Amino acid sequence: MAPRAVLVDLDGTVWNSYPWYATLLAATGNISESAALKHLQAGESIVSLLRKCGVSTSTLERRCAELALFPGVAETLGRLVSRGMPIGAVTSLPGRLVSPMLTGVALHGTFTTVIHAGNCRFRKPHPGPVLAALRDLGIVPSAEVLYVGDLEGDAQAAATAGVVFAWAAYGYGGARPASSAHVLRRFSDILAL
Image (cartoon, rainbow, N blue to C red; front, side):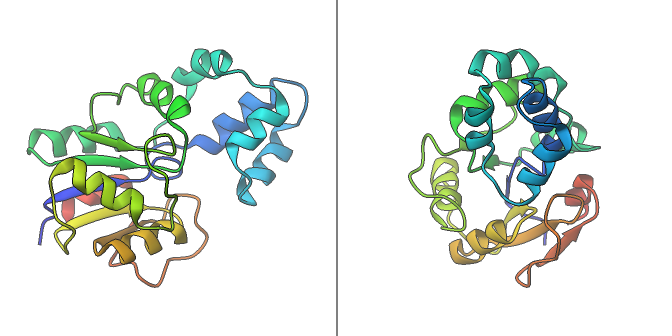
């Protein structure tokens, strides 16, 4: 059954942010790219790393156009929008990062709602962000809603919220979460669901 609405995580699902973050952090001279990648892969918060390395918001905003989307993301989102599919982004990133990043990759107007750490007091794996996105879209949680993410916390948020989870196997998660209903080898696999 085709989904009635699609929610997506951003880091590791829509955009390949780790290499970009690592380059941004290394430009400060306070950390190497490889060390920054290790910190990110170990789960350290990008907000914490940006603060420790002294990366200003204005520097981040200037470099957002260098952020890379995963292959097929823009085209797939465009096709979903043309079908009239309600689409929301659900991320743990703060809004002060999300907004310029979405603008930098030319996706700012794509999402009907963007739930982030600045407009939702809950963080994944709590279902609150997923439920907030559905409220914004005017949709009741059900098996007709798809949440796409790459980490176990995304899967837990989807399961607790009562929506179907699709694991972005190309992302940053190491193993398929047990509650995954679908495995996406590439973002465009959403179109076949």
